[in-house]
Image (tube, rainbow, N blue to C red; front, side, top):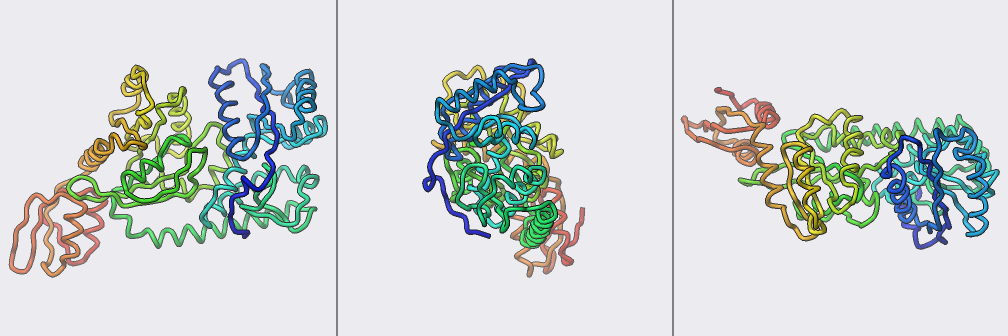
Length: 435
């Protein structure tokens, strides 16, 4: 695969116009803010946004998605502004894209293709690159007819230089057919399965840890908080989807006990379903976590709607019932606390106010994680040979020792341990459970 490198400064910015359809059931958040978010996505991808077109309709037009009159207005705007690309806020069918490009005489992409393009440029690890490439090929399958017209380059891959919507998987021949694409998809899935197996082997030792996963809307500040808690260096950038790769760190909380925290990919409204499926391995970190840290950008005017968007994805992953700490982040930018008070009365029992930028609230966050860990513990009496100091050390590190006694060459510990840690300790043949 072509090595990743940033192409954002190596290509001329595409001049784009954004298009949205406001259905009768749409709210202002569904329309204006969705297009604001689309503009931010376009900027992240390296496009210059010249303007936007919105049409209110009962339902999208089957042929062009927007009505013929609005289509004429859009064509006039394209010619007047010298635009090269039109970006629709919703996913278009392959037929709609073909019809629009033929009528407008310029490139047309949708939100899904734009997000995939951003993922292609931000993927850093081999696993993330494979996941993005798989998602792009899945997206490509029903759109081959269009690609026969536009896919003129001879090679590609995640990180390859090209225009928005074309970075990612390329082919060695222009007349790419379904059989070759399906073969490529099969190969990518096989490679990801191999990585998954390697990951299971490499992370087997993690099973003893109490695990938490950061979740939240993209650019909510998850990676900054991760760096604060773990004193590690996780890639941070003030842009959408800066983090694609799941990063796990050991963090010490109260009494020097250790937990594992994982920084995961951010969510967004209208997240392409095939992208969620392709990032199965990364999202598995969320599924396997013992608890979630739902990070919210409290400086965003529609933080509540972003919470609901994240919760919809968590529902799809069947993890909505996991113990969750609401982390109200970027509080240094919040002036009106009335909105926060309403949120605290609505979204669960655990909440912390933080600022990843200033470090405010980190001690409170550690304390709440410790309280959550304490609630999972059970008391056990264990007999361990004194010669096995490594096992005794693990109990002290991962639990709370209440009492210590000696019996000949044995140590008897009464300790509070999570079920996960207790099961891990009991796997040692030399350990006996007394009660």
